[in-house]
Image (cartoon, rainbow, N blue to C red; front, side):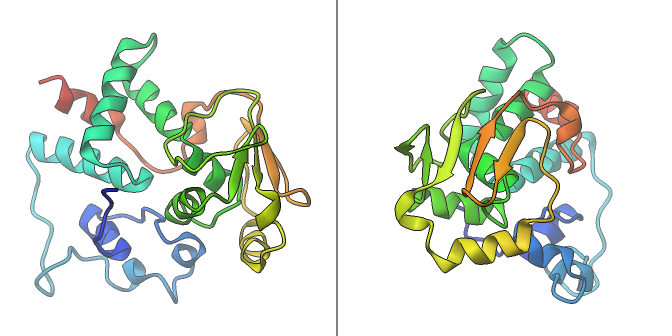
Length: 209
């Protein structure tokens, strides 16, 4: 399976903003590498060059791909699907990314980062409607119930995760019961639910050329 191998903090420095790729560590100024060194990766003291219109569009696409941990072929597929749906293409694209199983696990607070959520899903730690699912890109729908698999509930791993995330705000389209290590999809994501600064219109412009 293809995956990103670049250091997470290096990706944040490249995009010039926190992408929250390392979970709760990103919220600590003492531990966050981006807070300590927000300059672009490479030569020390290197300044960010002024981007062209195309450069801005490309950087925005790369940023969103990195946030959700999606590579180019799959990201383009999401865009093609979003373009065919009713509504605003950019919003549709973000909603498709939000409805991935790994993202939903992260949003429920059952993982400290999307990267961790993706690993936990791949290792078979979650069920959807009672059936084990190990595909991070699995599309979650309204009414679906996501839970930690019975064989994983006693793991200290999830105890540590809940301690780290129990105070995190849960988006309105999801509900969670930390005692049962389970959550449910009660609605569809909205643009207001996406809490990272994203200019999705730049991605639409890039792919529309």
